[in-house]
Length: 226
Image (spheres, rainbow, N blue to C red):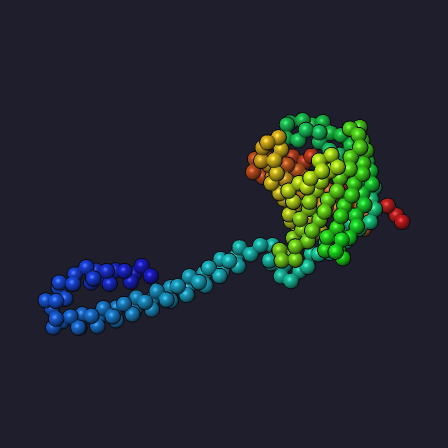
């Protein structure tokens, strides 16, 4: 619409000429109206074209969860309901250059909440460093079709910032931003190798904005047969 400012602003800047040219003023005004109408029509057409372009750009930026359309991911964790033997490998000092790992072995119990739209995970494990108790409350958001994973340990007693994500082609990826030793980091949690009797969980940290990742927690679950 910037084109409308050209002829109209210039005409309004010279009112004295219109007073001295009354005979031709009407003709000039009629011409200006016609020109303005053409500019206005062109502007409206341009706006329509821009609106269409914006729609196309919006479609190109459609997120993976939007592209899934009516897909419902509320049953994504149904495979894990039950009791599992868990073997954990944990990096002792993440993002310090350390390569010292420790292990834990224990039992994970997963049960449905809200008819499966949420679930509660409880892990009790033991290792050289002692006894560990942790839980994760997983909540499904039907609007975004994403899950949030909310973790806490008995040692900390508070929920960590949720890692948020979804499953795609049998692989779950979840991300969050947290702090480690006072420094902001990214957290990635991945669930893979899913079968009816086993699955693998991997946590990694990044302190360079996601350019590189260091794995610091790997858990392998094997279902306990009832």
